[in-house]
Structure formats: C-alpha cells, structure tokens
Image: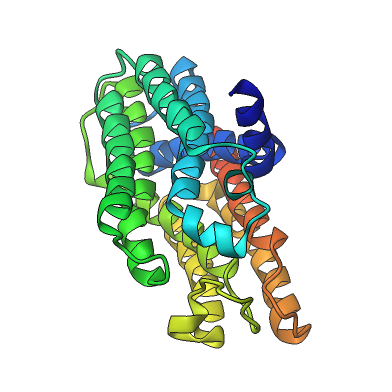
Length: 293
C-alpha cells in the first residue's frame, strides 16, 4: 500500500507544486487576516502558523484524494492514465489515506481551540460532499456550476480555519474584519478555477464553465475575479498594499496569450503564479505594514 500511495502522490499531488502552494496559502492568508484587523497591532509568524502550513499540506492531499474518488467513473473514460483509474492505487488505499490523514490533522491541531473546530467542520463538510456523490449521485459531475457551489464552502471553511488560528494566537474574538480577507482569498482562487477551464475547443467529455457561460464570458469572469480580489485587498492592506497589484501581471500575460495570441486554451501557468505570488505578497505586506516587534 505504501508503494501505491507513493505513486499516487507523485501522480496526483506533485509535491514540487502543492507544497509551496499549500504553505504559501496558509502563511499568506493568515497574514491577510492580521492586516484587516486593526486590533492586531503586532504580529509575526509563530509555531501556530507552522502548524497551519503543515495542516494545509496534508489537507490539500486529502482533498485531492476525495476529488479523485468522486471523479473515478469520469476519469476511467476520459483520463484513464491517472493513478486511480489506471489501477496504480486503489480506492481502499485512498480511504486509508483519508482516514489516517483526518486523525493526524485533528491531533496536530489539538489544543488550538476554535481552529480545531473550524478544521473539523471543513473536513466533515468535504466528507459529506463525497457521501452525497457516492450515495445520491449529486451533484452531477457534468453540472459544473452546481458542483462549484457545493464544493466552494470547503474553500471558505479552510480559510476560516486560518482566521481561527489568528484568533487563537492573539486571544481576540471573531470580528467582521474577517469578511474582506475572506472575499480577497476566495476571488483570487476563483481566477484560477475559471481560467484553467477556459478553452475554445472542448476535449471529448470535458467539463468546463464555457458550456454554461460561453468562452468569452468565462474568460472575462476569470479576469474580473482576479481584479476584484486585488481591489478588495487594497482597501485594507495599508501603505504597502500596492504590492498586491503586482500579481495582476500574470493575469495580463494569460489574457494576452488567450485573446491577442488566439491560444486555444488559457495558459495554465499564469493563473497558478497569480495565486502563488498573491499569497507570498500578502505575507510581505503584513511584515512591512504590521509591527512585528
């Protein structure tokens, strides 16, 4: 089983991408919450942030495994070379991975109060979505909009876990100051979600938002999501907040390749770099703009 799971990780969760992505997400969005809350007058990453980063690295692996189980029937037909449909790993292996991973995450976050509750809620919701798919066949994988609406709370809950970590670290209570960072992080993610599915030529059986909204509208929506994320961030990130505008350069690169270059698909790399650089710059702005004394 260990060998099969190792092949699964390399095939579905390449660490060279997912580890920097997960760690920068955890640290960057944590920093974003501190920037938005004027009650946080002094902040620096602590052991709790390291715990959150490790939690994210494991959590993203579990979410990948859950998605692969949900998409198994589809992948057998359209992506047979992926680890699960190819037989390189079994559903039972992933079930063990998910079960052990959930226990590890809960133990890792034991004693972190409301952060533990938020994490348990996120994991529980993700498992509930899988159960609805396996038992009820809902939502249909071809209904991409409903699928997005059903799965999107996972994104909100995992960001709330980071906010709960800030509250645990600072000893503060919940505040409406968390709303704008949540909106910033959510819309930044939506740029990647929409852009990676923008295409002028659908592959056989491909699931994409262009089947619902059309090519141009989906492309525009991906750009608008990125712009909204940056504009919202500028409202609370202070004098160094202008730095969060820089990742829009990757949006321009993608848009230029798709519209002026007439690429069949929106390039894969620019949206990923937009999100990754946004996370990194949230941390940079917090370190420059908050008293880290």
